[in-house]
Image (cartoon, rainbow, N blue to C red):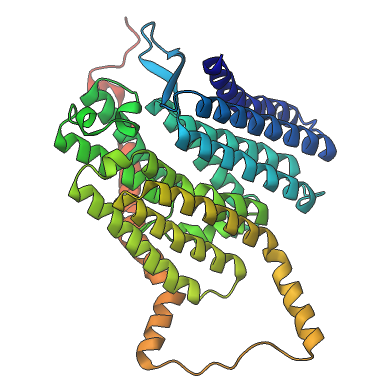
Length: 441
């Protein structure tokens, strides 16, 4: 009975957002979207059902053996199930899933009022539901296919919401920049999945997420380190760790509710959750522990400096959140998994509250100044010479944008131009040159 409650609870938690996505998206594609009130009602009902299902599954898990459970829902493309749709249910997945659905339910209620009469109202909620579905797949992923599908839904919905106000060029440019960084992380994730298939002969993530040293030894030390480094790179791209941190302030072009749930709360912590689940890999060798800790420390230091020089509230908040993300990554590298999860939960809730209240900050400040009869701005002393250089470094966000454009973007653009030129030349070569052509058989 307990096993059935656990299984059906997890299935309903995933099915509710999927059904809501179909209900919202199909009428929009047909040009007859639902009314705002009906969209709000359907969204709240689906999120409430999903949260209740996760809670029921959590109670069943606590009442059972409290051991990781694999739920097999079938296979793809092969009678033998070569690509398995497996869900891994344990305390980490249930906790992160409940937190994700609860946070998204709060944000959807806020968004219903914040985006009232906005032309992209329905589009926003379709993308929000895609995001929730991706989060739940990442939380419950028991095979690399499920993990990659959730990872892609997260990235796609995030980039599209950055470019939500597509009538302006800046959101479009920043959306493409965010998507390009996500592509790097996705390539690393896909490479890790392929190597896991090749070396382990399996797509089960229980080997990586729940397996100890005895299970990982089946892969070989070099293979474990290689997969771990690729997963660390994928998590770094998703969580804006150094050197991928420059996309985070660009993501503030989206609506405030999406900034809150994506880049202040959940999306930026998805990489942390992946590292937490794969902590057996991260802590397998000194190399992976040092690499993870170095990325976290560098990110925390960079975000602390950059956040001090920002002039808008959302950028300050995103760098404050990134500082804590860096510290969480260090905690995972040290093996303090419970502390890292609690830290992540607290940071998610705090940043969500701060982002949602950000539009009221200036209004409250002006009201306070009117009540006091004067300005609250304090006179600042001019910085020393070294302080000016440090301030310039922080203001320019470590010059990472320029460095990445020069050493990564521009070489790739030149390579793409050269390949396009080569393709055009090859297309002009007559078919008979390759021994083909002619009308005969």
